[in-house]
Image (cartoon, rainbow, N blue to C red):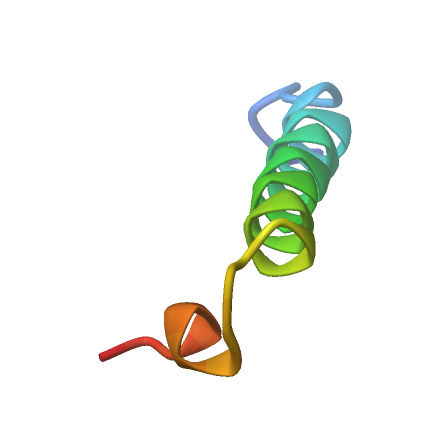
Length: 40
């Protein structure tokens, strides 16, 4: 990042990962049963 001047890449990746974590948390929280939270 420092070589290419992409100072914004790490914060952007953090925001993306946080967004995915929120989506998964919401999916788990609103699941009807424990089977709905499985990755199968």
